[in-house]
Length: 192
Image 1 (tube, helix red, strand yellow):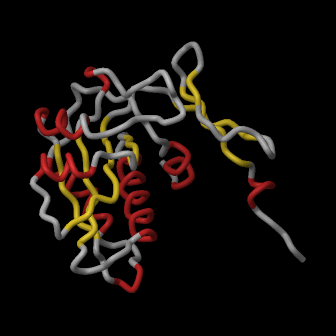
Image 2: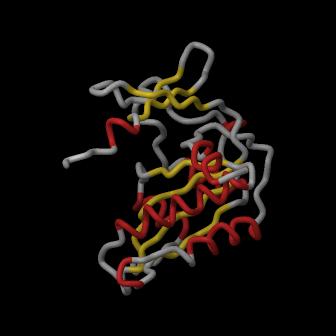
Image 3: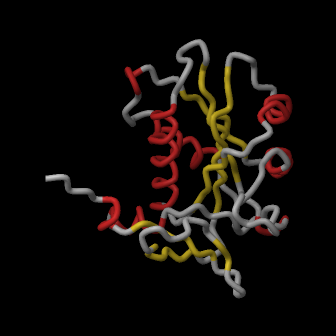
């Protein structure tokens, strides 16, 4: 798979084959990719908690909200839930902010997963207090995101959006997830 294919196949998947398991070595390999990416001031404040056992995954799932644009959908049914999660933490003893680092690291992990035939979703709607309690995360750490990972079972279609069009993703009557994307002509500006 070339890099363009990896990028275009790396979507926010929300439905997975729950019977497919991800082992801790694979998760560690994905986190290792994030160890090599650029970091603001090279502080490297991000840490991760890997969760791959069924009981732990069920607990994490209960702390997440899924697909805000899909009003009538409250997340995948049990047989389509993620196989694992990476809880992205910021070490407050190292840095009070990590916005750039979070995006770079999360995208790198998701691209790595895609290159392995997997998929994921960066979830920001998290009951952070509850998840910290469940995972016994010390107050030194702040949850930034949760990366849901697994073997995708849903088709996701990228659509070219017209200028001024609707950015909201949707599912059609066949369960196909459609994601509008702005065109190159709209985002590549020329001022001279």
